[in-house]
Image 1 (cartoon, rainbow, N blue to C red):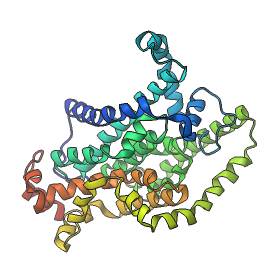
Image 2: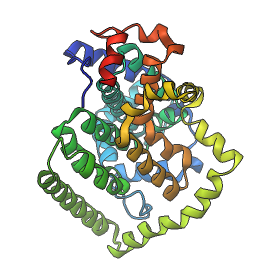
Image 3: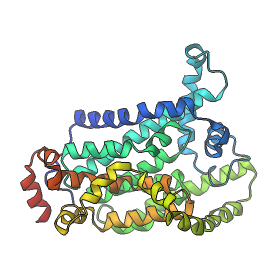
Image 4: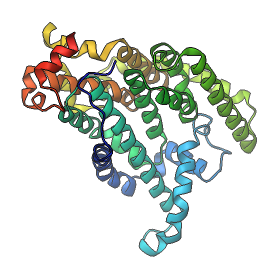
Length: 360
């Protein structure tokens, strides 16, 4: 349930938070967009091809994620009209499209930041703590990687943020958005469906969820069929490719329980993760925030862990835990005595009252 102190935001506040997220992402990601060497990155080359409508020869894992590439292609068209005049020193046809991916990914990630900020508030965090949580999430190396390169993770991250927000806010609209976008964003979005059916049932009842899921699933299957026709690929090939991800389980587990794997996990949110360790130091400290994260947050972490094990890319998929991390971080900073300087600032309610409300 939404926290009593989480008053509705007016549009100037929404705009300010959005610009905060955009500023945190766009600046650090620009060097990644400008200087990244594409010669060894199959992922980025694949999504550039999808944006140009070239599906033949693109990996079966990536060709069915056309939403972000399509947006980038639409943004690239007006850019192409003036690009050569503004940057004549950058030859080659890929530059406008690369810039378009950068713009689209930054805008989508800023949208995710806005959703995260509001979710933190709904769970009882102060505005300052919620803003610090955004900084913790967007200073991750994976935010820079996602925003600066021709990738599609930005939309999938927004889907995860909307899913957690839908459950905490009781928002039927957010549930519908997740059911329509999850599968086209990434086929592994299917893992979100059981979680959303259970924890989102108070926001949108099962019959309506199933109806929207059927609509989104039908559109997704039609899109896959069209792409298969463009690429000349039999539909059963995508099924075999999906099952092939289970072969990554052994590799992922070995990597996870290694020194390198531990470093990769820590590097997702870096030294900001130490705040959570502080919040685990005692039973009283844990009671400040663990109940507010709740079973829905733990369930979402299980889904993220499944993504990590099936993909073999522990750090990149672990970044999907950003909604739960942001809420946990903001609550620790808001309520733990170690961070009283941040907990003093709240939107309408003193911190002592917020604590009373959160435990009532």
